[in-house]
Image 1 (cartoon, helix red, strand yellow):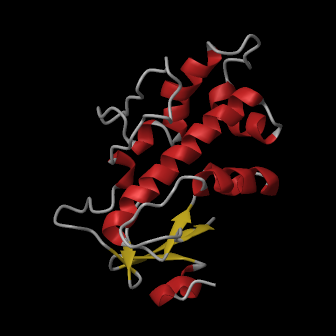
Image 2 (tube, helix red, strand yellow):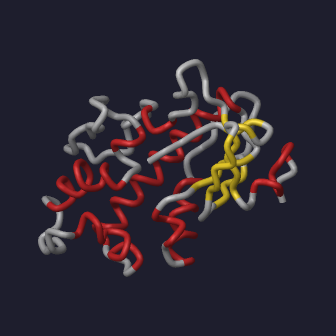
Image 3 (tube, helix red, strand yellow):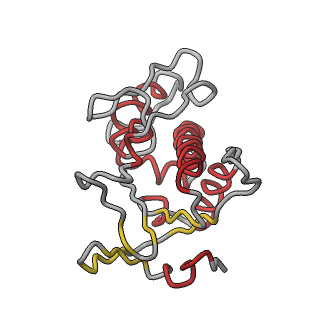
Length: 186
């Protein structure tokens, strides 16, 4: 999982180049995890950060091991890398995993909205490559998380972006960026 903040087409880097590293923001786990589910641990050592849930590593190390104990006929061992295909096929366990990921992203975006007030969130990764029906279901689950940003009553736009291009000089470009510049989301 990665994250960043773009302002006026430029990546906000911060003093040490780590500004906008949204994956390591701690998110509330109450109501996201099952009652007996362990709090996820990130590879960075944090517990309960967004990446510990909403990444492929989070699936393999945290979510899948728990959910495999909850279903009588779990998928084969290589399911960690194939869980998206299971989700697209409607597998109940895979859908639970992706629901937790969507909730984690929704909570992360809510936290980020309180200090960045974005006009749009661009989302990449595996969900972009999934079937349209699964993508729509997943994005709907992300949007179900209330956006409690101060003075904000609606969600910023959520836009899937397949291709990011590094332009140099701290500029990052998504092919959709021009439509969202200066808050002109369409």
